[in-house]
Image (cartoon, rainbow, N blue to C red; front, side, top):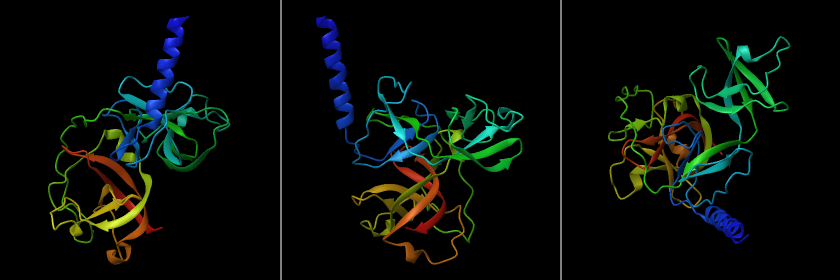
Length: 257
């Protein structure tokens, strides 16, 4: 009896510690408790994540399972639809149109999924349902594989890396998983005159850098000054930077909030 009571108390104490933990830096949320898996979101510094209560959300030591709010974009193979075009139960919704892509979630009857496009024999879908992700509780960032140097940006693009900011995807599967981020659009040139890897960054509500912004993949047709020090909505892919705890968002679209 005493052993069971001690186990319950230990469990409650651990749950309290996890709930009370405050993140000291932007923290990537992975699709699996593995730092080489896809990043599906990034938690702000200063936030206090709570362990997920979802069924089966079990994390190994050093990790925490958390709920990640949608919307999400995913892909379903055409073979997972029956003759009535209904999705088969437990069909995998993956991060990119590839049989080897990471699974974001499995379909459950009643789940609201909207088909938004077709890519070959894959259906692109969007859904609002929360998914379970995993954050690392370890203080150190695991080593990441070195990616080949990216091609130079075209003259028509803005905000491209200015050197020393090589980006390493968390995994090949993360490359097709853009997300929406909000914050203040700030120039990095104002910070003590020091050279930065990127020309712009996204700050959170506390004024701390949330992520650098790589604008080399979009064509900006108006003057970027209109975004400076303004609240913006960024849509893009969050990735870890090589040999660094910093995060960079490969921006696909940018608009004022």
